[in-house]
Length: 121
Image (cartoon, rainbow, N blue to C red; front, side, top):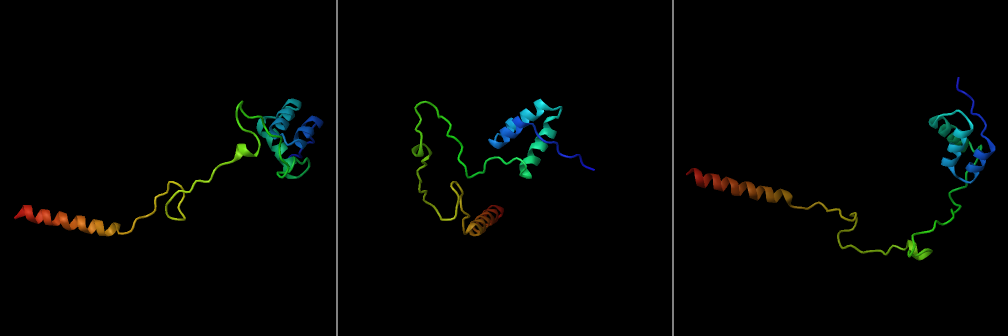
């Protein structure tokens, strides 16, 4: 029989409501004699069963201040598109398979056999 999941203290519920899962685990460990793994599983259970719902992924978190001198806002996340010549369907840096590799081996073997024949006479 599994142990029932205990209710969480109000300060843990507050941290979960804000979406601070790590803080919720820390507060739960401070308020109870649980170990890290047990506290983490309790928090995950509460989130999974929607007992205490963290903010949805659609809500945007507050922007973090960047280093001094760095651009902020939409321009800070702009990554210019670079067109790399090559065959379509290849990832950047990927080298496509070459054709005719077998013909080169045949020519190399023919030259080697010719040299062996020449030196053995």
